[in-house]
Image 1: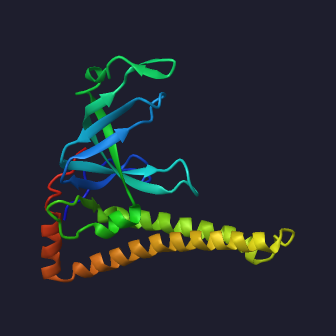
Image 2: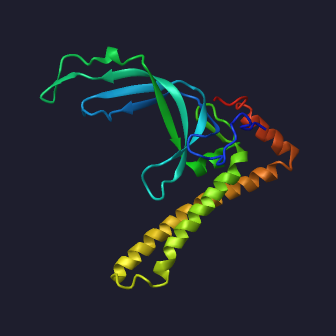
Image 3: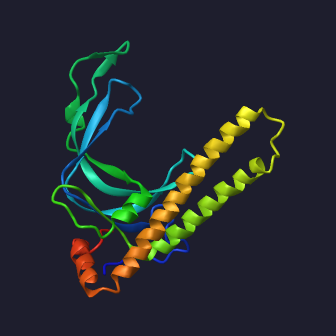
Length: 224
């Protein structure tokens, strides 16, 4: 079975930026970027089909800065609109020639639980395939457990009645939100545990091992 043996040894095997798998893009991926300092400007970049490294990312927003996965590759700017502005009004041409053809790094974000759950499934002709190295799953399990335990620990003071100085409706609303967070974190842990259990069970069956091999043989070597 393919593994990430080429990866350098990390104290944390799922540290942000670490390659933990591969992503097979079957059709061109186009990204529209309109985040420039002027609202009128935009740029379209296309990433060609191919196998790209799958890396660990961490969101800088949201609750507890959750981990996610992303495929990363060098795309090409295929269209752009950067007209000169006069008083905020576009004048002249689009100036696209100065941008089209330039290389640009693109990232395709993936949900951590879904990526692990889809590892080893039968590849389709058009949909992208994802492969997260099973050797990294124990580390992701530790992350999921720690995240769930941290969320539960913040829940306890409310359940113990230490926030009784707040209106009851506010307490109920807070408990509702925390319960949703617990369900979300528990779902991630359950997904990884279930996929690991089924993966291990597959290893006991020669037929299922052969099936997994066929489903993942596209990962002949991982891009660096």
